[in-house]
Length: 80
Image (cartoon, rainbow, N blue to C red; front, side, top):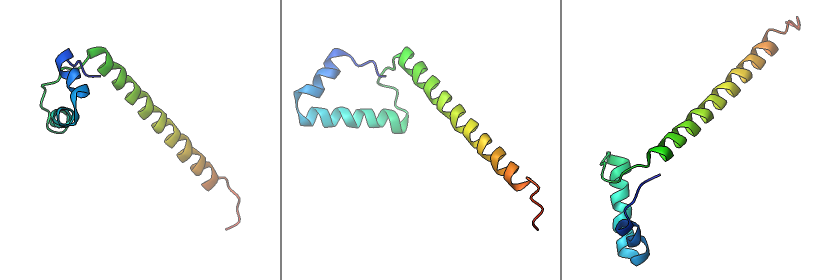
């Protein structure tokens, strides 16, 4: 999802300290909104599409579950 320059991605292979520092850099980006690591626009749009699709599926399942519960509750068994 991130567009890392070659020298930045080489740090991942160069040792634990460099990897840890790159990890801190990434955390600053994610947690504090530091926009120093460029995003790949295609990857960001694809991820957003997946998140929206998942949210729609969750909402649809919740609607169906509420409708089924409502049907059971108002089924008119008359046993009260």
